Length: 151
Image 1 (cartoon, rainbow, N blue to C red):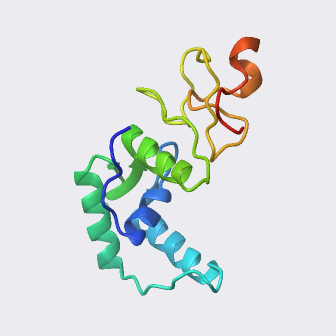
Image 2 (image 1 turned 90 degrees about the vertical axis):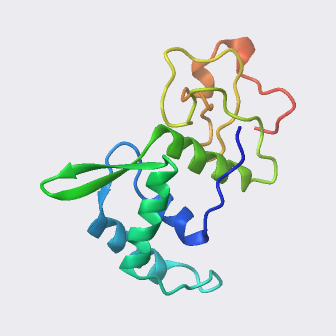
């Protein structure tokens, strides 16, 4: 797994919003971020973000290949790329006390591989799922128990 990019807390927040499946317009992203700030627990740091900072964050994330935009009736629709999914999910995995094994090439945790892999590796953000995108019980019986990892 390559090292995580040097992103600010706000840039990580922006990366976490547009999933690779449905995406969000810039206005929807801005609304989500404002809602997040109002609903965040009191002990979380409050930051004063501006829409210009959102545009800058999206430009940086796009330059890093972590998000892409599609034109939707003149307004961009932002989606995380496969690399963006992997990067964001690996960051979430590293937040666990025992992050477990790294994903294999081509895995993001969200996208199912053609077949379950040969060894269940817990994808922490989605309990019961493997980095290959398959549920634990969908793996062969001898591949279901993770080795050296607390499930």
